[in-house]
Image (tube, rainbow, N blue to C red; front, side, top):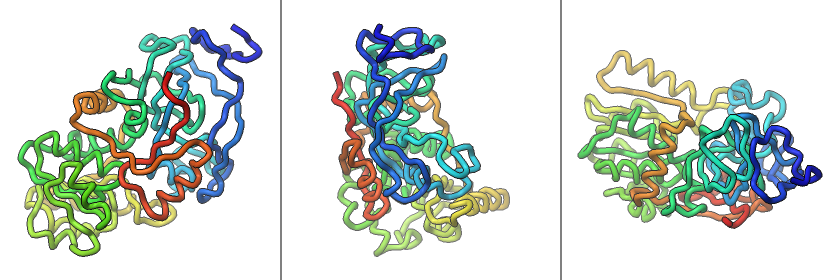
Length: 349
């Protein structure tokens, strides 16, 4: 190999093609709004012993990207992402692409393998990923669909199954049903045999029905406690309803699963509401829960299976390239996007 262009001392094996020492990437050097994100030329990452380098075909934008870009709530910074500035300046986590190099401790993948999963700095031509956060790309799934699925998909899967314990025939209410996590939650719940009602904005109601909801409710016209029925499970992604109001929508022994929190303060975000729900659950018959999504093969593998068998199909509501990442994030913040925003980086080989 030409070490002038591929100087990667940690590689156990690399594909027989030049790996450039620099690449294009969507980068932020400080926290802030979308204007802090710029397309820059940066050094190509090197893998550790249990990591791989992925030649990125595409990635996806979700609400997590916005939180990491702004550094808000401030609790994110204390969680290890950088107090004054981002530790990882390249944004993006969802990834689909082709392995071009593997670390010395990696046995699951070889250069040339097409993969999907979670990477560090996926809004770039090359990204480094832990091998245990990737799976082989199913033959039935396109790079584009894989690229927008993992982060939101595994969050929805955990909310419904591990935490929500959804079962066939149950009535499920998904609040925030048109967004990244919500669009997957509606589809997964329907695939598992639940009767799903989705809450979203008026312009998104047709999309929510297309995801598999038997009923779509405009939150501006109808409060959730005025829908006219109660639910065995409520998946609350939007985070803007009071616990009292949500409890009125639950059956006496129903379950609430809070996914994140978009309506809290600058310091803790929606964490305070989440904590109150868990504490209240100790004194009532209803299960009021919140959780942090686990980025593990335990969920990535079954998600890939659901994509492969057609049980779920990601909805791409917006599309951009690396140069347009900042504008696409701004669009998500200001007007919202149905489903996910696809970031095309390179076409699959």
